[in-house]
Every structure is written in structure tokens, then in C-alpha cells.
Amino acid sequence: MLDAVERGLLQALQIDGRVAFSLVGAVLGVSDQTVARRYARLRNEAGVRVIGAVWPEAVGRQLWLVRVRCVPEAVAGLARALAKQAETTWVQIASGGAEVLCMVQAVTDTPAAESTVLSRLPRTPRVTGVSAHRVLHPFFGGSESPLTKNGQLTAEQCARLSPPAAKRVTGPVELSTEDNALLEALALDGRAGFRSLATATGWSQTTVRRRLAELRSGGVVYFDVDVDPALLGLWTSAGLWLTVAPGELAAAGEALAEHPQVSFAAATTGVSNLYASVQCPTGTALYEYLTGPVAALPGLLSVETAPSMRVVKGASPIVG
Image (cartoon, rainbow, N blue to C red; front, side):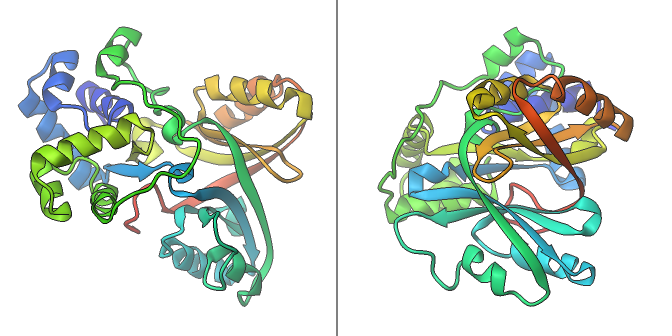
């Protein structure tokens, strides 16, 4: 069980993954040494990781939500294989073990190659169906907003911890070899020190500090927290595939973004044009959410609920 300091620290990291522990301590009313010890415990015992992530549009990539159905005995092996692919950013087994759901980053400036996940999946043995849905517009999650809905901090405390607002990237940014080395190091540990990052890039610590600030303010890199929702008492997770009248899609997506149960929401292509990842304490709470706030969404025509059974790969590139 998490205590008040650990819950506050988790929320602070969701606001700014590289926030100084001294600032977190000042906000929570404890010493920075206490914050550092609690972070070490969360990392070592609970698997919490701060991840530096690149917004796909910044590097000429598209985000796709991919649903893969296969024979039941092949689900676990397929999920593990997908988790090992660099193109996948998270992979989970869903719908009672009947399908694998993953997020895929596809390169936009070249035709799909034979080696890419999207092109290979339909020809994979024992796969019975594949549906790919391009993410058109995120309403919540990723670089759009930190996951601060299930925390104890006040609005004033959140404001103290918030980094400067970043620009929204609208097209590919040219990255150097050193930039890519920096981003790869941050993907493994978003809180890596400047000395470690300098070693990874060959730059001086001053150059690393300046370049990281540029990439953050330019909307190229953001920080995510890979954390098991169960640590926050959220034991029931599901993906919602919603069909909404086109004229109400923006309003429905914006309403979803305000729901405390939602950790990711985006407009997508396909028959279902709105997707949301949700977490609730219990199955009863999920039922109440579906029959209450979800049912009240403007323009809602239908909802398919796909319970998440197991997360094989989260935000971190390290497969558990």
C-alpha cells in the first residue's frame, strides 16, 4: 500500500517526470532525502519507471491502435513477440484472452515495409483477424496531458510542480545522432542524470541540459510514468471502443478527457471512432461508469468494452 508521500510523489512525477526532488519535498512537506528514498522504493519494489518518450509526429510517425485476434493458445506468445518490437509502445492481452491490443508507431514517409508490424501481422500463423485504427487526435494522455486525475495534490500544488507549457509539434523535426542517443537513454530512464546523459551523447553536461530543455519546450520529448494502476487501487482496466455521431466527436472526446477514470482517449479511424483506456477500482465501479458518465456522452451511438487481462509491455521499452 502507498502512503501519502508516495502517492504525492507519483502524482508529481506524472506532472513532470524530471521534477527536482527538492521541489517535491517542499510541496509535500518532507525532505528531499525522504522523496529520494521513496522513489527508490517505488522503482525497485513496485517497478515504477519514468520514461522519456517522443511524440510520434515529431519524428514522422503515425500512431495506430491495433487489435489482433488469434487462436487462444497463441495469444500469450503473440503478445510477447509484439512486445519485443521497437514499433510497439504498449501491448496488452484483452477481451478475456481473445485478443491482443497494441499501440504501433508507423513511419509515415515511406511505404510499409515487409518487416513492419502492420504489414506482417495479417500473414502471421494462427492470427485470425487484424484491425488497425489510426489515432487522429488525442484528447488525453501522452504528451497532451499528464496523468494527474487520481492524486491527492491540490490545484495550487500541481501548478507549483508543472513545467513550462510545451508547443504542439505539427511536423517532423530533424534530429541529430546525438539527439537520438539522448532520447534512447531517456527511454530507458527518464530521470537519468546529466552526467550519464553526457556520457551517452558525447556532449558536455551543459549542452545536454540546454538541448533537453529545447526538445521539451518544442514538444518533441515528454515524460511518462510506467506504473501499475493497482498501486492506486485501480484493479479493473478496460478499453472502450465508442461510436459517436461525427458532429459530436470533438465534444464527446473533450468530455471523456475530463473523466477521472480515463488515462488515454483519442479519435480514431474505423467503425468505432473514439477510443478510451479506463481504470476503475472494481467491476461494479466500471458498470456505474459505463451506465453513467459514458452513457451521457453527446452523440453516443454504441460502446464496446474490452477488459484488459494483462499488460505485457507498458510505456517503458523494457519488457517485464
